[in-house]
Image (cartoon, rainbow, N blue to C red; front, side):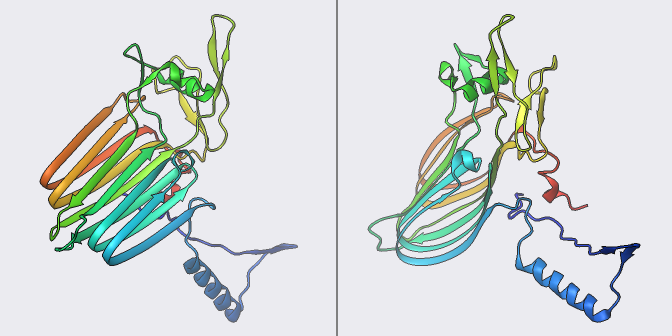
Length: 303
């Protein structure tokens, strides 16, 4: 399951250095005071893997006529973005826990509702997740290799190819009066930047790959198989998308749209669904293109 709000173990060591070596403070009152400060400080601020982030946690319980619009993330700035619209008449209980930093978005979002018996408008929720990570591209129905695709995207020439998918995960539930609905989901999305390349027109022409900085990835010139010739900086967040979702509609209209692919694994998933009546759907998806750097994963390491 997805871990929400990144945390790292908090450990603090204090030493006082001076001429002749290290001096340790042995006065009991001073140690008690320092310990109290450390404890208060550690509980006052969340310990994060990044010093620059945004975290939002909120719970709602609402009854009446409801109109909610929400967006989390800003696509390629945070790896993905989630947009949500919730409106209608009835009772709603909602909880959201959202964490985001550059190139990374993490969301837990739980919704349960009952449309009012005398409602003139169904309670309806629409949630769309749009990924920054590019999907699979083809040229004359032939898949474009990643070593060609990413330099072309970097140089702004990706229109020479045809994208197979929109990189979208979406669900819409409209519940009839006096019926209930639920939408629970948690997802991680990351898309760290590509370092770039330029085209060398001599000797038959080829791409020259630029070096990667701390949070970027790059290709390296290698005779290895496609996908194995990649390296990244120590702060690279990865290129992946994982989601677990539960949707239930006791009576109404349920719609789903999934259109996601990978130029790395050549995985392809497309689904369009519409149910008039009742529906209950449980699912999980994991898309892994490039794993995070070891340092970027340090918040997961407990032992």
